[in-house]
Length: 254
Ligand SMILES: Cc1ncc(COP(=O)(O)O)c(C=O)c1O
Image (cartoon, rainbow, N blue to C red; front, side, top):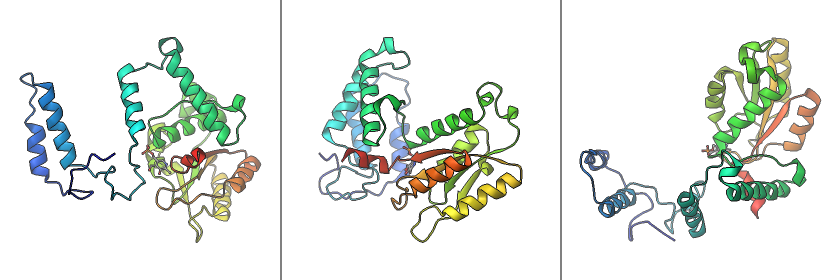
């Protein structure tokens, strides 16, 4: 399946002025013919997109959509299930729960230990993890907020991790300085010795380590942090371990 214009490359050089003029022509003052708008928008996207559906696209980090993926998204858009309450979308809610149990099983969890919900992507999943870890460590965080905590919470992720951690720290109120980017070893995996040193020095300084992130497939190189060793370290230190498998999680499907 390819939506790329025939005979063109994967990436077509974009002319920002021409694009802005074409988009700006829509002033929403008059009704427009939907068929003409559809064709126009498709044409704009054809000429102004890196074509992941191009047969010569080998980036693969942003995967090429499959036909069934497109059909599935269309189906979801058409039914537009509202998952805020089970009673509003019982079928979609059960499909979600069933799929999560299946994927959890692939990761080695027993069905009864799997809980979760689909997210818009990795950043939302990681944000959810920080909220869970904070609430687990300090239940009062959920009601009274960060000011109820006895000090500054800090979390640890490798220097090769996805830097949405900074945005998440900003958003959750712990602040970007609460993210320790732990140096990596020669294989680009988190250096466990450096992690232990950082946790110890933060504790000594009165800060409150609460969470370690092991990246299961780094954005830049697909490297997997030493998860079993991180799990042992976190168990010993009483820290929440989160595995960011935004990239590597796809391994569970094959
Ligand atoms: C390891 C990792 N975590 C999180 C993210 C963020 O995912 P998203 O862009 O889907 O929010 C990415 C995206 O590249 C990633 O590679």
